[in-house]
Image (cartoon, rainbow, N blue to C red; front, side, top):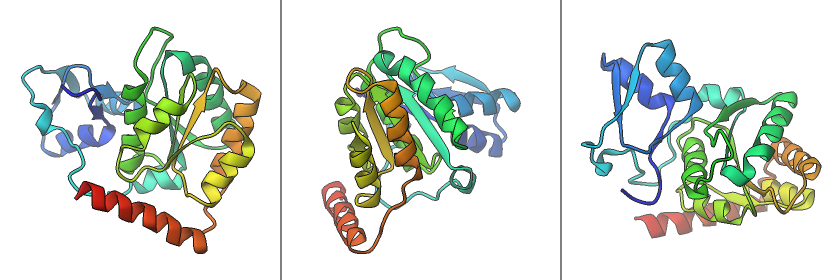
Length: 225
């Protein structure tokens, strides 16, 4: 298995239901989103880890065409949150803050302060956004840098590690970022609340910046062909 853990979302559950199935087999160690778990319980679907599955069967991107977005996720402004153990406490604080601001929340973990690996959760956040199952994503680790590197490996993701409001606003206005990474050991929770608010409420300026963002996508397309 590769270093990144496979992501299982509610789309996988709905695809199974559409085929008449009630047993969803996933690779051991898969990251299963809270919404996928809730959907499975609601519809009586069992999620079973199956070592016999091949990783090649996973839904990994084979091209860079934009996925069909989940209209509900966008209309409700759904924000997916993730963290490693070092970012767990800050994640819980920022989730509540985002809900207070009127945003819908999806939490893909981690769910405690047991040591875990940030690449797994950064990848899960990025894939949830790139697949159209979330409007934007927020990932928190100790410094915010590692998670930003991971997220930017996922096609369609423009992640920014922000330590102040100016950078957060600039990343949205100029770069149309869709994943925010934060460092729990770098920035205090009150400052992170302000960063999150600015980042969520700032819109892309377009204009001359759109041409530059389009060039980012062109680079991505060249490298992934």
